[in-house]
Amino acid sequence: MSFSASAADERVLDVQLTDHTLTVSLRDGRVISVPLVWYPLLLNATAAQRQNWKIAGGGYGIHWPEIDEDLSTEVCCVAHLHLGRQFARDKFAGCVV
Image (tube, rainbow, N blue to C red; front, side, top):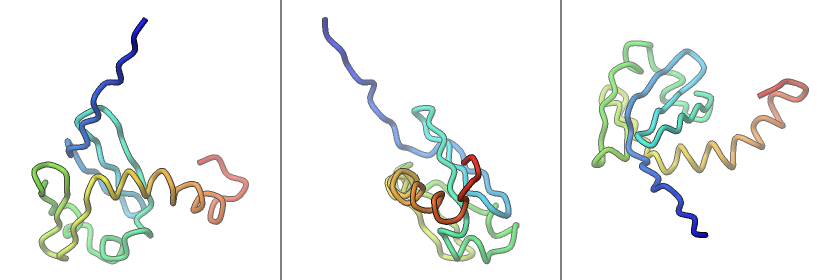
């Protein structure tokens, strides 16, 4: 019996922002949500500035021209996996995250 993992496609499909959360939908179906406090430029931007984003880097990045902020999907994935655990322990003790 053989197993094959489906190829991850970390290219950006969509971006949603609230006052507290950045959510990135990837082409492979994954959805990554992280707190905006991890990205001070986005946290301190106006709602209009946050909504003015463009897919960059061949689909592997997001650019906010008005605040000159760039994020890669690789950074978002790593931050979500590694920093998220520590952030959740430190900031949301006793809460379900």
